[in-house]
Length: 149
Image (cartoon, rainbow, N blue to C red):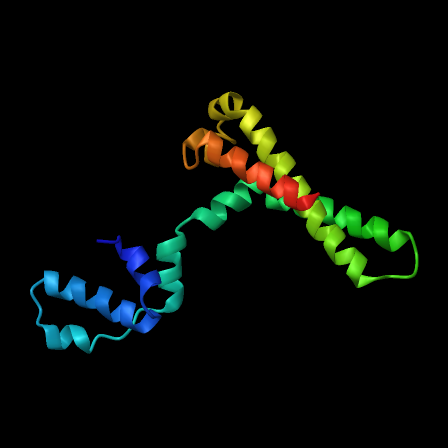
């Protein structure tokens, strides 16, 4: 038997929502007709049930605000270089810059786990708080680093 979040992935959205709504109602003693007429859960609720907090964990590992500033600096440097402005060159440069910066930020957090765990400002980060394991974070850093280069 699959966990509830994965059942939503295995079936079309509305069918999965009806099934999940029905299983909750049936377990509380309501009849099957009422469960079959239940409105479907929004798709966003099912996706967040499946993805959980992983997107926010990855963004936190990437230090997305800092990485965005690095991307902004890169785009400013590209603009100062003067014409021609080629989107086909700029876009992959900015994406690669973000991914390389994300990788560096994640590696820095992996290196600083013990110190981050002691500081009030940083102890809630994904690695010191245990939201993600060190091997998982290192795999994320390797993947973003390779993709960025």
